[in-house]
Image (cartoon, helix red, strand yellow):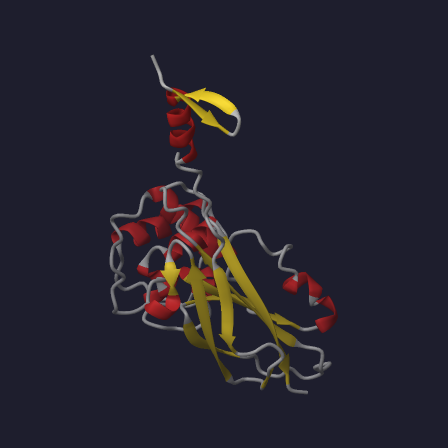
Length: 248
């Protein structure tokens, strides 16, 4: 027979009380917080010169993954999109955070999990060729996709010089194909390119003859986290945009 307890004017059995106490301590669903991403440098509204290097610095604070200030965020997983907008009257398309909240293409996100950005950049030679040079050299056909997938997985030598491309045997064919498709499709516009890292620099365009003086640069930093602490795959993406003026 269970002992009776008087609680709030109601008589409850001890079993009911124990049940109510235990259920109140049951684990609640873990909610994954959205990363807080900030472009620290350059500041909003900064005026930059034509054909010059612009330095940038990004900070990331994520409740689950950690804080970039304490080296808890992998730099190659932080992306910076750089847009040159020739007519600032169309700026709203680029700075509307809700409209641009869609995640990056899967091929690009896959690149951030690999050391690709150690050797390649969007539009400048590093150790290997830039992505835009690769996109310009190869026609986008199924046979080209297969050939480049093979190079990613098995490595290559002599295609772009004497420095070998190391193999990536842990990359599965489907992921390699997503990467190839993004490289061939997403790197043909010189006015829109990607950089990886918490800090770095990019070069602005040469001033074109007949420039109207309405051009601006839009920088959009983003970070996609690794999901909630309970292991669920609820990945969240944080982003931040700033607009830079160009000298007249």
